[in-house]
Amino acid sequence: MKNDLPVSLAGLGGPAGFLRSSEPLSLSPVPAPATSLLEEAADLLVVHLDFAAALDRCERGCESLASDPDCESSAEVKCSLCIVGIQALAEMNRWREVLSWVLQYYQVPERLPPKILELCILLYSTVKEPHVMLEVLSYWLRDLTNQSLPSYGTLMELHLLHVLLPLGQFVEAEELVQSCDAFNKEQQLEALRTINERRYQWVQQEETQSAPEEQPATAREKLLSSVSRKLLTILTVLRRALGSMSSHFCSSPYKKMLLAALIVCLVVVRLDPAAPTSLPFLYRLVQLCHQAWMAVFSPLYRPPVQD
Image (cartoon, rainbow, N blue to C red; front, top):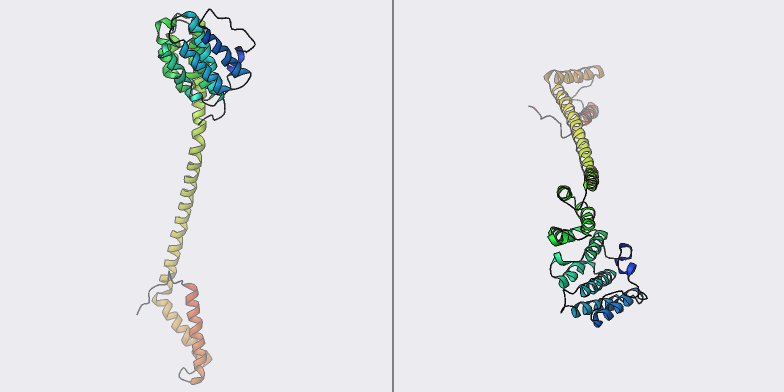
């Protein structure tokens, strides 16, 4: 849901901007019920803010005109009723129903009046859902009868600015401008310039949105790679040093050196290993050697005992 608040069309040229309950409706002679319902719907919408009742009057008025759809005066009243109904739907946060609600009275998109189309374009552009009007406008603009209307150029411009460009359909927009007879040469150049500017903004926005997602991942990968390389180097050096120390301490000359040191110690101190008085000293010496061995070698890197 992109917009869950009531949408007001007063700033878009909606009925609140041109329908007032105190203003007389200058219409050609039409069936009295339809005219009365239009005046009542406008009054309920603008003065009483009773949008549901205003929509009901619009629906009843359109149904009363169904018997004479080709009459010019009836078409004007029908268009006004639909405009009031669009405003009522928008005020009730039922703007999603606007297009289908209007088409039930005009059956096909090609028969929609320009005023209703303008209002629908601006409505769906305001709620950030211009794609709703894409197909309808494509049918309407291709109709040969509509191409002769004075408002055809205005609707073409609205379709370009509020539907195609927000959807990123730049190629379609360029083709439409180049094939449009309603635009003169200067208007075509201006429209193509606008398309190029919007295309550039679109590309810049996509790059800005994608860059923050890629940069943290790249930085994180670089950091992990650097840490892994440093850790691997440290472990390799440590393994080599421990291997060298282990091979050194376990070598035969080192064992002989320890044995010679023990004999020298016994000779200097003049202890008889078999005498009971020398046992505490020998026991203490063995403990010191064992503690030194345990301090140098951890259980993980201690070399295997050789016979």
